[in-house]
Length: 389
Image 1 (cartoon, rainbow, N blue to C red):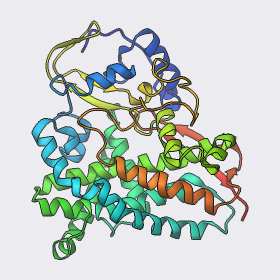
Image 2: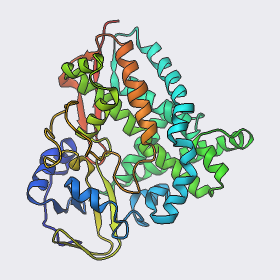
Image 3: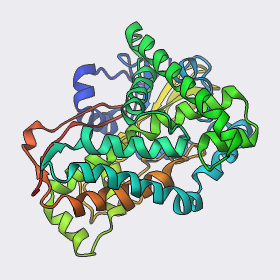
Image 4: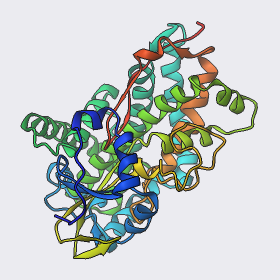
């Protein structure tokens, strides 16, 4: 392990709210070894921004990493030419042009159907009844797995996430994750014949057309599901929560002073849905006085970087008026999130404006009933809301 200072955490408290510990680390031991996580954490924004790009030192290639073992070696676990080859292969499915010309209309139609069902109810759990199905229905068409139900999409996504963050080695979590990967493989197998006969712009079809191997296709579909469901789901519900509990900022959007995109970007800075990205040390290197050794495990803490007081005026506040341009919720280097354009379209162009337009007077049923959790992935767990039906 590295010779970084040791910082102890209470895993349960860290999962419930990691920000107090992350703040203390940034201020006292910005690069620290956390024995409860078995990794060295880099917590300051500028350090992460610089070191994430140094893939020769902090490599994404992790043959023994949980993601690789459970999901296969996807492009997120490759560097250099192998990474770029797969990134180029999927680009036609997630390019800004494809998002605008193809996916935007699909996102709107499917979100409309969900709101049509909800509108007359007057109450719901915004996570389970809106954000989750909106995200899952979008991901179904984007991946090409239109034969999967939206509850199953959410279930397998959560299973992948739990498996990939199972650093405690819980065998039940591992088994459940493997069952989820089997479900995804079965849905891929069922869709392939139709997509061979009638290719489209989906990830599955585009990778088939590019000639990627079966293992590459399956690993990258699982990657898309693991990040493409929870991040939009949590950002939709979380940004809505931030606006409901800060009505003055919501009115700024209504009055045209701030965009929905700005609100989403500020939320993703404030509570980053993807709070961490793991790396493997490829060669010995000294960073800010800390010596890293080959095979050390390192966590780049995006959730901490985005609350760095050296970069943001009011780091612990949701404030759409502050400059959040230094935030890195989608990463900063060659592994910048490939789905960023689709996420921005779904969340800022469709899900948020349609939600507040259709559900008049949307507000928390009881703010005390809303809860958040997680540190590697963080978002609202439940969010009872009401509106004027």
